[in-house]
Image (cartoon, rainbow, N blue to C red):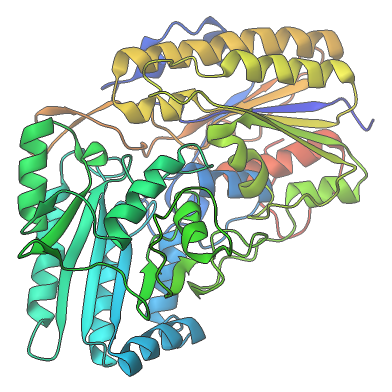
Amino acid sequence: MAKKPVVLVVMDGVGFSKTGLGDAVSEANTPTLDMLLKDYPHTSLKAHGDAVGLPSDDDMGNSEVGHNALGCGQIYSQGAKLVNESIESGKMFGSDTWKELVANCVEKGSTLHFMGLLSDGNVHSNISHLKTMIAKAKDEGVKTVRCHILLDGRDVPATSGMTYIDDLENTMASLNDDSFDAKIASGGGRMKLTMDRYQADWNMVKLGWDTHVKGEGRKFASAGEAYTVLREETGAIDQDLPAFVIAKDDIPVGKICDDDSVILFNFRGDRAIEMSMAFDVDGFDKFDKGGYDPKVLYAGMLQYDGDLNLPKKYLVNPPEITNTLSEVLVNAGLNSYAVSETQKYGHVTYFWNGNKSEKFSDELETWNEIPSDKVSFDERPWMKSAEVTDDVIEAIKSQKYDFIRCNYPNGDMVGHTGSMEATIVAVEAVDLGLTRLLKAADEYGCTVLITADHGNADEMLEKNKKGEVAVRTAHSLNRVPFIIYDKDETHVIKDADSTKYGLANVAPTVATLLGVDAPDCWEESMI
């Protein structure tokens, strides 16, 4: 063992509210968190915008870029920013993948399909990228374009879908002429079809395949009609709208066929991987495609998983993250342990390790996944917080590990449901976990760092443009806590009252506590 062990707790989606509006964190009964903020060294961290490599401070953080920054001690251009840079420089349209997919459609007179989340939330995708690609495809001789749209309502207002449908329809109408035909072909809510993650529910992806690829499902004359009718019939917010297919004379306008090209235009990987597997993996067997498996050229906006080589073709190269904390600890011969439940397991492993599925050392890195419940999280807001806590306590007791990290997903996953009552319970469940964890840390002489990757539970309500209070399901732009708990030693956070720190300052602080040298490219330690 090096110095005393360090335990890092990520309370996913738990930030500091600026307004108090819909603040489930403050509403919750959290005696341990209250005690920590009263009695122990703490500061706040920026977890959005330029602190995590996103284009502007209007861009909310997310768990992916958050864990990248937490795990690598640096700030890399991410997501929208990465794609923006590639589009602005022309690099994307000069890529071999773009040229190949376009040439395929031009030479064969086939259709170019775009599939992805239709919003400007900038977490998974941006509608501006889609509009630019459609215009470029026309310029380069593609004759037919079809769009398969997932409605958001999670990273943008809950029922804003029609705004984006109109925006896309108007763009296509301005491009359509005798030589070019672009249409919306299918769609549905992002939590109903296509965009599952961590292989939690393959039926969502199967429904996406049936809807987008096979053109099977309830038919409507237009996306606007589908949206209006389904909203009225179900009362569902955008993310939960049922699947729909656009048809003319009862024939789908955009079934995906042999020789077509398909681009999944989401830039974030977690909810793009499974549909990519369905298109890209030979001998795919996660669901029955019903005998319909067209031979297409498929590409993602980015490569969503480098180790799995998914997808094989992509338009923009991902940030090549090097010098992660895991690499530094492995090189120093230190043992680390990572655990979460399924919903955030990928975050404490893949995203933490710089978008790599493989460990840097099988000997020095141990990962554990606790299976998540397969229910809506507002029904079981405690999620697997007890089991995650049990697991961390066992890891502490083993005295094998120099660095232990865990993620409690509750504040984020329950926050996304929009249920204030359930989210209060979620935050309380995390506080209970902390209570137990700190006792074990006291007994075995650990330093515990408590932080978050972004806000969510701290802002469950928002005022809309009319000044009316509405449910908010998206992440917040609020700062997040960073607390140092150590029963035996007092640590002083430099400039604790300032707002100069972000998530990328956490890894250097861990390195300082463990007595290992941080790479020159890292941000500064807070102690």
